Length: 85
Image (cartoon, rainbow, N blue to C red; front, side, top):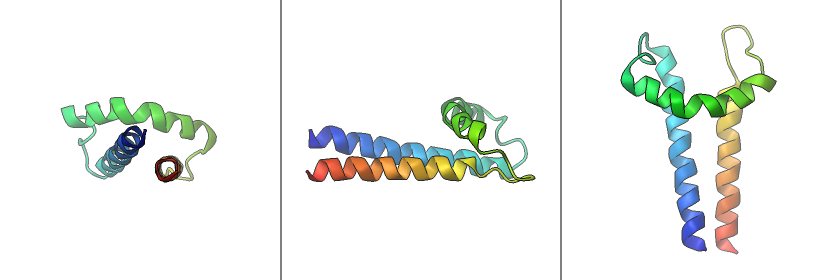
């Protein structure tokens, strides 16, 4: 059981890094239109869309990715607590 929880924790960590990379790609023109950017978009956008429905952007700044990453962090910490039980 501990190995499954550890695997889920690692997967959540990798997904968090994928989200961060996808968000940083918005700073570079044309980065999201590359093959790698499109692949990350297919992986990250469905998850980010959930938060964009509830948290509208303020001007040019979108705070929904911050909330999405924080939720993944709390989920990972919860799985780590399960592993310690």
